[in-house]
Image (cartoon, rainbow, N blue to C red; front, top):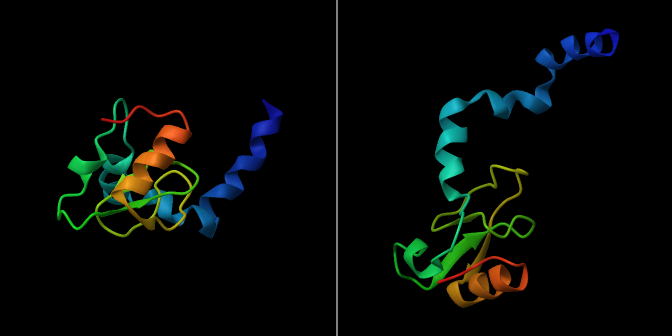
Amino acid sequence: MMGHGGHSGHSGHSGHSGHNAESDASENSEIIRKGEIDVYNIDVNMDGYVYQDQMHWNVISDEPGQCPICGMQLEKVSVTKARENLKSNGFKVK
């Protein structure tokens, strides 16, 4: 296929450098929540707050970080707000 020949230039593209860190990707993928989401259980330190991506609502962590899907910084929100965000965007919550 001739159209795919242009992809060889991607290997040196600096914007993709974060995708090469396999340990980061596997570690961050654990914060992509699936199924029925128990936000209270995610709040491991029990401070009443979690970090949630504002585009991918099911990306939630108890620690600051970045969304493994889009790379945005996770925003600190109350557990109650995180549950509201999930519900209003069609996710099932416990």
